[in-house]
Structures are given as structure tokens and as C-alpha cells.
Length: 402
Image (cartoon, rainbow, N blue to C red; front, side, top):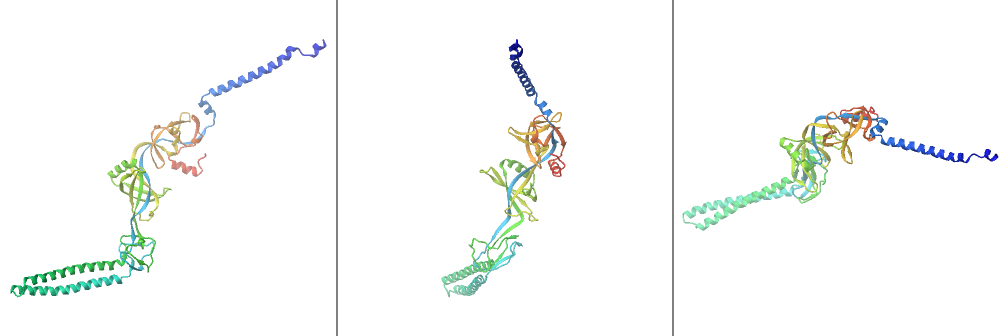
């Protein structure tokens, strides 16, 4: 009896572990069932539980978009002249200041003219001598001609005298050529500017012996007004450029990397061949450059407007996203949710991209905050901007909260 009172029944001791196991199994089954229910819920329900993402959006817009081709080019002087001495001699003086603007005909340098002047005097003296001999020969020819008519002289003597006269006349012609050569050499001792332009740095000082065959010029003269820019475009743009040129004069705008306009000119030359190595076409534009903002050797961008896409569907460039499958845009759907739409684009101008497919009139695209979006995520539109420039200005002023 004592044992029965102090020791629990054997059946009761076995029931306790079974009860604990049952409770554990029941809790696990409940947790598994809840996880299955959550996994079975659609993405829209999951997204609906997340807080809305703040974004900026704009409506797609139809507009006329200018087609502007952009190429990188190098500024070149319209004329570049190496100023050399054209005769040998001593550089007597340099008559320009480095960086000076000069006109055609201005004296740039002078060489010692004494040797050239002596050659000129010698040629003139030779001509005077031959002219004097010619007078005497012509007088003798006249006398021989009269004597032969009276049979006092032979015909041979007349012919010989005629040959002497003709030889002296030829000598005078040679003397005149020698005088012209000597005069030209004397003129070349004064070095003048052949064109208008700006002088570069002086390479030779007065007192140096110069030769016409020297490789080092006295200085370099460059014409900066007007000035040229040689630039390249992909060969696929050739048709557009030719069509624009056929309609009339094509404008060209030169800018820096930051977009600062340096000058406006016109397209002057389309090269006659395409570079097979780079598949590019060279072109040249001419700019008046009255303010001399374009400088030879500088790299500039050249914008070439060649047409207009009429009534195009456009979005800001900020709305165009790139993914592994191509371009896409985030579009506001029903219930202020964000959906992804694949798109195709065309020309880009002034921060505006032409959309050729994927969007329609009335769509609103997200231009800011896309990196926080998921498909079908709820969004809160906190502002709509007409252009990317307005959106950027507001962001910089602190009015936009990211």
C-alpha cells in the first residue's frame, strides 16, 4: 500500500512526454501553414504592405525634336604660313611683336640688301652696254645695206651685220631678265606678311644668317578670322548631313565639354571618303571667330542640326533605364503602382529622348527614385517636373526631398 501511494502510476509517467511531443508537432504545423500562406500571396499583396516610395514623375509629351549630330573636332587656322627668308642674307631687323595682328603687306623683317642691290646695278649696267653696242651695230647695218645696193659691199657682209644686231637685241632681253631677277631678290630682302593674321613667337633674332632653304621659320603667321574646325561623325550620319546640305546652308555650333558655346558657323566641306579604319567621316566647319574664342589646336564639340523629328513621343532622358534585356522605363500604373515597360528610343536632344515604341500618350514615367522601386510597388508622387532642367534646378535649391 505504501508503494502505491508514493509512486505515480506507470501509465501517467508515459503520458507526459507524449503530450509535450504533440504540442511541438502542433506548433510546427501551424508555423509551416502560415509560411505557406505568406508565400502563396501575390507580389501585389506583399508590395501593398510596404510603405510607398517617394518619386517624381512626368507625363510623356509629343513635340518636335531637333536632330542634332555631335562630333569632336580640332580647331585649325584658316591659313597658316611659315615666314621664311626667300633669299640668303643677314637678318637685319625683325619688325613685328610676338602675338601682333598684322595685315597683308605689313613689313615683318628686313635682310641686308647690299648684295642684292649690287647685283641689280650690275644687271642694269650690262643692259646699258648692250644697248650702246646695238646702236652702233644698227648704224653699220644701215650703211652696209646702202652699199650693197651700189655693189660696193657684198651681201654676206650685210647678213653678218644683221646677225650682230639680232644677237645684241637678244642680249638686251637677257639683261632685262637679269634686272628683273635682281630686282626681285632685292624686294625679297624685305619680308612682308602674305595674308592677314596673328604672329606667333619669334624663332630667329636680328643678326642671324638666314637661307631660303632653312627649315626654321622666322615666325609662324596664322589667320584666326575666319577659323576652321575639322571634326568627325559616324558614317551612318552621312545621309542626314547630305540631305541637310542639299536643303541649304547647314549651321554648326562649337562648344566646350561643359556646353559653353564658343562660336556659330557653317558647314563648309564634307570629305570625299570615309576612314575605313574608324568608320568615320571628316567634315569642316568655318566660324567667323570675331571674338577669337576659338584657338588653333583646341579640341571642341561641334553640334550640327540636320533636321527635325515632327510630333515625336518624348520623355526626359532620366526616365530611360537600362537593364540586362535592354531599355525600359518605370510607368505609373493603376492605384499609384510602379510597373516596368520595355521601350525603344531614337534621337536624344537637350535632355529629351524620343521614344519609338513601348509608351503611349497619357503615360506617366518616373524620372527620380527608380533605384528603390520593385515591380508593382506603391509610390507617392511628390512632384512632377516639365523638363529635366527644372527637376535639377529644384533639386539643387533643396525643394526636392529624396
